[in-house]
Image 1 (tube, one colour):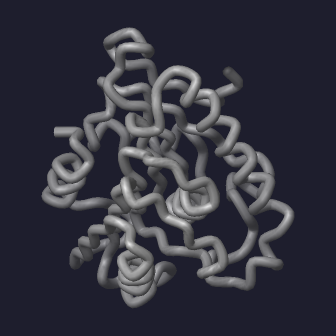
Image 2 (image 1 turned 180 degrees about the vertical axis):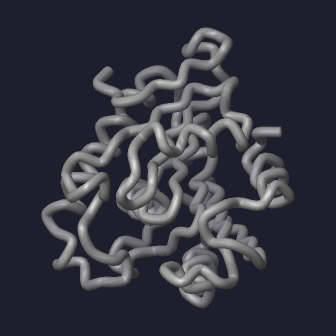
Image 3 (image 1 turned 30 degrees about the vertical axis):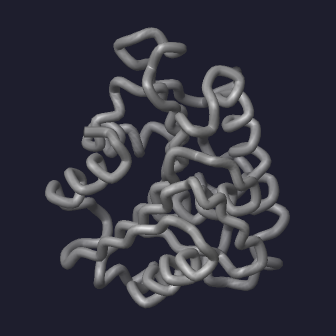
Length: 203
């Protein structure tokens, strides 16, 4: 498997309970998101952290998620293809029901976009400070849990857009949960980590 960073669990990878694809944020690296993986308690799961190579300076696509889709092409499609290859590799070892797609900021938006373009009964899609890119590819699998966690005062990902994304998925029949917290937008408070772990069955 051509994975940029594989964080092996203490158990053998084939016996790890879940597979997790964790996507880093804009202008970051695969290794930059590993501390978050520790905070979420993912050590006992098969964790794959692909790295953005198609955008610029560690980004999955060059412009804002809220920009017209055409502005982020062809980088967006190339990044989705990279995620697809990672997911397909994981699906050779475990069913979609044991797979979590997750990301932070730009990586969260990419995880949502991929899950809606490729609907399967994933265990969950975790969006940390992420939103839907648009409403062109809304085909959520009814078995997948979508979990939005964001800040009330994130200057780049406005809370109203997070709420709108959650409500849109609910209207399409998806299982979606939303938690907005007061505080800094570049970190997840400890109490929210507990809620995330419980919702995703990671506790």
